[in-house]
Length: 137
Length: 137
DNA sequence: CAGCATCCACCGGGATACTG
DNA sequence: CAGTATCCCGGTGGATGCTG
Image (tube, rainbow over all chains, first blue to last red; front, top):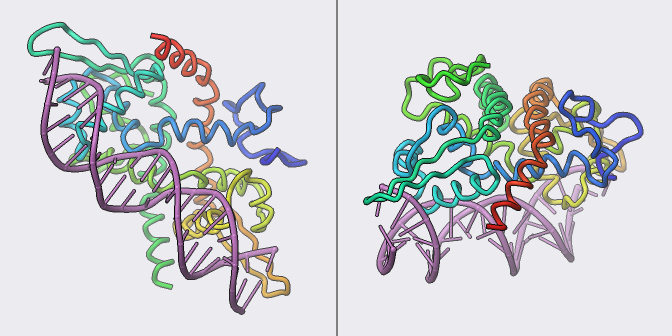
């Protein structure tokens, strides 16, 4: 397949690397794109982050996430719920109240995500410097 | 990892968490979106993955990445180079030869990325199950 | 308050052709 | 072989208005 090589595949020697699927057609590239298309949108990770340690109502979420539109928050929550990362509990009151919380699965996502966030925070400056250097030339 | 403390902001107690910016308006959300917009595109992580342990020429990359267009590979490489994640070395020969390699910075990205890939691989099935359950209802 | 539907602007990215 | 330029389509996501 496309990413395989005679020697060793990047991503394949990691503790978490896909175990049995390595013989498939497009092993890691598929996985990478899967996760990216699932969480790589503009808001999903943000929502996961906010719901990590407390549950929140729709409006509270909207207030906390700067710049998200009503529509996108709904959409994001739907897809997260669909994927089992977030749970939705509606209370039949008036006015309606709906609580959103991260599921265990959703919470387990936090760790790897934090790794990435940490990397970004750590190397943020280097990247910016590289950019300026590049743009200067 | 200490993600369970209910009193603290998600993402703020991580060893890698942005240090001084925690008091700012939207601390982590900015970082998350930064990293996402940088690497969240269709191909960047794939390229980083391939260049992780060896350098490759343009055409080799294209051959290994299934489905990438000539144009997008160029574009992706440019932006990775600009951000200091990939280095470009051209040899003034005929026909031209250009080698791409991951920089130390680029290589340091692999670890957190692998975490995410690992998570995806591990929980892939759960997500699919959740989806089917959701769609069924 | 929560959620759905509609309309629309924008841009990511594919196909292709041309240059050094 | 490596890179740039042009054209164009489709999806993402913002704004807004209507419902329970």
